[in-house]
Image 1 (tube, one colour):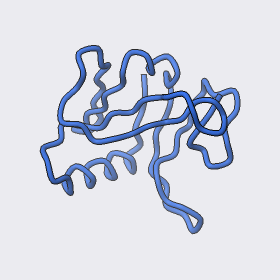
Image 2: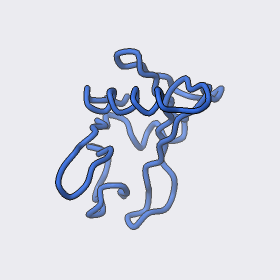
Image 3: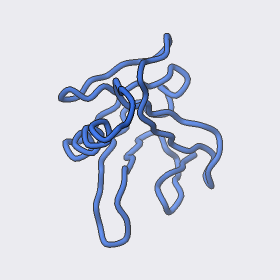
Length: 106
């Protein structure tokens, strides 16, 4: 389904530890929009939705809604720190093209 690197897991764990309300995991989904057609959305959530696909990596729960699943099948999510930017990066084998920021694809 989807993979999280060790760096991404650590970033999610850090975000969960800093949350002000109880968090069970992170939701990753795809929505229409962005400069290439689809954009990735991520956020901490307190519970999964009934139709979510649930994947766990080293204690980090990832929730993917059923509609987004086919768009991100096989995707690896990493957390990258560089001089230009830091944040989550998506390596999606289903993307025909992606924008220069790496946050949207077609």
